[in-house]
Image (cartoon, rainbow, N blue to C red; front, side, top):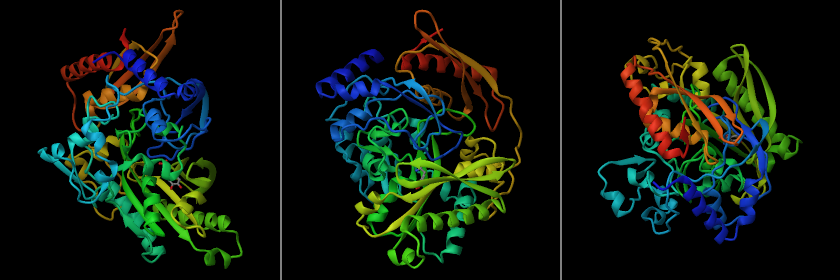
Length: 502
Ligand code: DAH
């Protein structure tokens, strides 16, 4: 693999040739650091930087730039802001984007069309997954050596698992409990979708829900790109606009969502969300004497407070104002549960622009999004997000259909083993990239990757020391196994991240 410096140079030349040096300069200006709260599937808001020029080329350029973020940065909702210089980084590959790559000809829409087959090469592949009516081969999703693709094997292996569709799984049980609430209170008015393909276009995932062109969530550092125009959805909001355009007025979308992220007991690169949307017509708010927005906000709060009570019982609740690109006003609902305030969901009154584009000039709507793992972890007392993926009978046998909130009994706690790794970082280093490399080697045996030391020497070189906790949720690991993993991790970190081990 050619060094990362060369890659950056290649990309800088590309940017220059494309005449977008101004944008690049803008991207390099000091920018807020975005610190994410500990919230799986949490909604995100974001301070805006100067808007970028739009257009396909710009989108491609933007997608080639990684933003260096701190540990808990994430997609649409940021609360704490600190100053940070952005750094430019390029995906794990050395060649520039190739317009002639077979995959770039595979449009996202063809991937997403029901029952459509993929191109010949893909079709020939032995293992075809069927996800949401779309047949997918590994080669269609994981394309090592293609700089517009950053999906690793570990992520491909999660596609099609659809934990939320298993009635005996905590996520399926929770999904069904939420469905019951809406069915019971809205006499079946809400149409439910839980099998939509997670492969969506950049347009659906971001543009259609008004995510700004310079929003950090669009970066390769945060989102899994299949190619420059196609991603693994990072939120179920990706389906809002399409469903509105198809004429749906009340709907719930549940699905697996994908985000490049740090590693700890509440963060996993694949998790599950549910999205809800309700559209009102003028007669509904006119009869109330309220203005459209106040009416929708009032109805939204009533609906979601009811949902929180349905799931958590008679808890104390509070509403917090926030920001999302797709709603205005935007709120978070928090409940007081197990002696602390906990965020349950993000929501708001849908931006008029989204409704307008779906041909609904005269309507108002509300929308919400919630992370299923986050809620299931507290409802079922599940201490580690990796457990949701466990096939160990000692886990799976503890849950059954309709049994919301049965408390998980740990079958035993295996000891963690800690190993440190220190290196001099380069400008393009990001923690999400490190975590991806560690997961690529250790898979679910890694419990946490934590920055424990960070300093810059007189020469301006910055050193990071990370502590990796190895722990299986199912068995004891041997010293030999862990040492082997750690050596492989060191090798991969050195080879793939352009850092110098210390
Ligand atoms: N899409 C948001 C996220 O993933 C969650 C969300 C927030 C969805 C507010 C909504 C909404 O529909 O109105 O962080």
